[in-house]
Amino acid sequence: MVLGLEKGVVRLVTYSPEWAKLFDKEKQLLIALIGDYVIDIQHIGSTSVPGLIAKPIIDIGIAITDFEEGKRCIEPIKSLGYEYKGENGIPKRHYFVKGDPTTHHLHIVEIDSEEWKKNITFRDVLRKNENLAKEYAELKLNLAEKFKYDRVAYTDGKTDFVNYVLKRTSKD
Image 1 (spheres, helix red, strand yellow):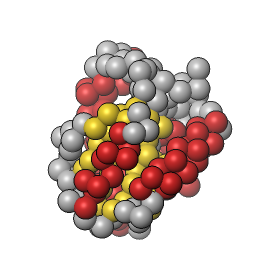
Image 2 (cartoon, rainbow, N blue to C red; image 1 turned 120 degrees about the vertical axis):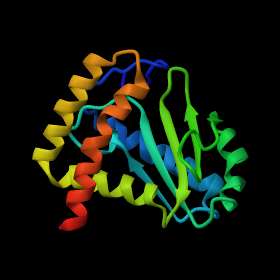
Image 3 (cartoon, rainbow, N blue to C red; image 1 turned 90 degrees about the horizontal axis):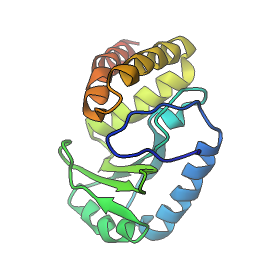
């Protein structure tokens, strides 16, 4: 199974080159529907880093100019089978999930937001720095073992590492 994860479960799989192709396919569908409202669409998260283990869910980041304007994207995106979850804990983010089991997470944020910068910067650092990517993979494996059925705790457990990488990057 290339994609799909049951709700509430943490399961990591080895990297698949198919993920980039599946992202590109989804990106084209999104551009056709909401391209007039967005500035950029990026593959983010661990599935966007070649060689990195990941939960088999494609994360898609969509940059917009204004959170309120982003509301225009909700109904078209829902027509692709996504479920709208509101801000879901991150202010000024439109968040969607797709599939059962879940195959995609979609995050719409303002282009100048910290959330956008964080997602793109962290991805780019891991793509360029093999040692940090390995360190992150080890952390993820440990957390996945510890929190097999607690996705929130698994995600929270990665926060310090992500912040460390971002802080280090801002100094470079």
